[in-house]
Every structure is written in structure tokens, then in C-alpha cells.
Image (cartoon, rainbow over all chains, first blue to last red):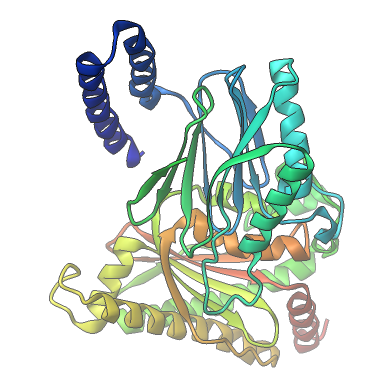
Length: 202
Length: 225
């Protein structure tokens, strides 16, 4: 809620700059896609936000924003650029072998990646190529935590992505701060907001 | 038994479709009641200490015991991206986490009262950090001492550590740790409120399986059950 007005402000400024540049330098043919992306960006703030809870996975074809907050967990955003659909998984632990019992697939890196990929492929009815962006894996209490589960999570996610032949194109991992991740399913843009106000676009 | 369980409103039972087999599901009503009562004793003492430190009236919500899968906890609190100041301590020999979470603005106000700063805005950040850590020490200390006195189990906390971040990313860490131990954890929480403020301060205790057993066993001995 707090981020919405700031975001709107940023995107409107960037859209003005962009379109001005476009008018000055680009040909009309090239201008069109720029306009298309900026209008998408401005309407993006009105998109429905769907929260992905811990250990959950959500795949979407509709233009929505998937939102989640992670500390030592990792958010995996898989995106199919051809069909413009994608999904987000909020994993908690590296390997499903750790768990005492059989559990939700969305909890573990090694089970979440294949099942989310399958869900997206089923949704798009296509064996499309997926690309991945990941964020999270922080160590919130660096002075006390001997077991740095965040780093292990990131490592396991990368392994699982490689195993499932999904290309990792961007990451924002590590550190000792939480992150709020919003994933625009239509464009594949991932915005990472840190508590102290810094935002990064993946 | 499940009908019987739902009658006790202070115990937050599993409300999702996903019901994993787990040790804490096997704990019976009496044992849950014992743990809740122990927590309530501790929380009462903690609230009294908070009131004494601030020289203000402090109210306390009815403490709760959650037997839900740990990852359901953020959805229960619904605080998601709220700025939070938290103090984290561990029970030294038990691998049990205790978290004292304040609303970030409320933490500043409390620290200002403790350090006698003229206002929350003029408070030095390092003073705030040490004041909040000290408050954590006092509250969690009195919480554990009360339980320790009742059961005779020695509960020594580690040094406090403070963190400021969003609520979800702070508790995330503890939930992950609980999930390693079990799919269905026992989590105790109590909420405090200064009488003229709206912000709730939450004390969360993530009970480890060993400590659950010890506490229940010793309390039963004490009460002669």
C-alpha cells in the first residue's frame, strides 16, 4: 500500500522522459513499442496484487502482480516471455530431504522449481522456454545465526534451476535485510524493494 | 477429540486443508493447556515489567498457543510489510527462539520514554538500539524467570539482538528454523499494549520439541498429575 504512490510517481516521470526521447530521436515505427511498454507501465499500478504466502506457488496468465516478502526465504519468479505468463514460488528450505514428513512442494527449492515450471507450462499449454529471476536468501541475524539457511536456499535454487534447464537471468540475493518482491506476470519485470527504501529492478 | 479441541478459543488450531502428521498434533488437550498456562504466567510477569519500566498502564491480550504449520503464521498476523523493530533471543541450551516485536514507531516512543529523551524524533539511534535491547532483556528475562520458577527448569537466554525490517522478513527466519524441526509447530504468543496507544507489541515463543516435553513433564510433576 505504502509503495503504490511512489511507484506511480516514478513511472510517470520515466514515461515522460522516454516518450520525449522517443519523439526526438526515434522513428515512428520504433516509437510504437516504446509507447506500448510505457502505457503498460502506467496501468501496472492499477493491476490486481496477489499475495503469495510462504511455501505457496502461484502461476498466472492474467495480467496481475504477484507480491511476496522474503527474508531468508527465496522468491523464484519464472517467466515465459513468448506466452507472457509466469509464476512465483516462495520457498523456505533447500532440500525436501530435510523435512521430517512429506510436505508441500512449494516449501523446498528442489521440488518447487519443477512443479512451478510444470504449472506454468500447463497454463500456457506450451513447452515454452522459461527464464528465472530470484531474490531473497538474506541472513537476518548475522551475529547469531550459525546456520545460514539463506545462502543454502540460494545455492539449492540455482542447482534446481540448472537441473530443470531454466536460465537464471537476474538475481538479488544475500545481505542482511528483507525484500518485498513484486512480479509483473505480463511483462516479466521484477521489482525488489528493500525496507530502507532502495528499489531494484530485475 | 477434535470437537473438544475447537472449544478452547485460546488455542489456534490448524484451519487449513493440509494436515501433516506430526508430534505436536499428538499432544493432548491437557498438555496444550499446561503450555498455554505456563506462557500466560510468563506473559503476565513480562507485562508487569513493561509497566514498571515505562511507569504506564499496560494491557495484555489473552495469550494464544498456535498449533499451525509454521508457514501459516504470516497469514495469521497479517502484518506483512509493516515496519517492525524486533529483539531476538534464544534459550541457550535449548535452541528455542523468542522474539519480541514492536511496531517501529511504537519502539521509538518506548525507547524515548526509557532514555528520557525529549521526544521520539530527537532520540539517538544507538541509544534507541540499546534501550530496546535492554527492554528485550527485561521482558524476556521476566517471562523466562516466571516459567523457570514454576517448573524448576533452568532457562538462560542469550544476549539480545535487535533488527529493524518488515514483519514478514523478520519472522521468516524463525519459521524456516521451525519448519526444519516439524511441519506442525507449537508457537506461543502474547500481545501487549500501552493503555493509550493502538500499537501491539508481540512476544512470540517458538517452542522446540525438547522444551515442550520438559515443560509439560515438570509441570505435571509440580501439579501432581
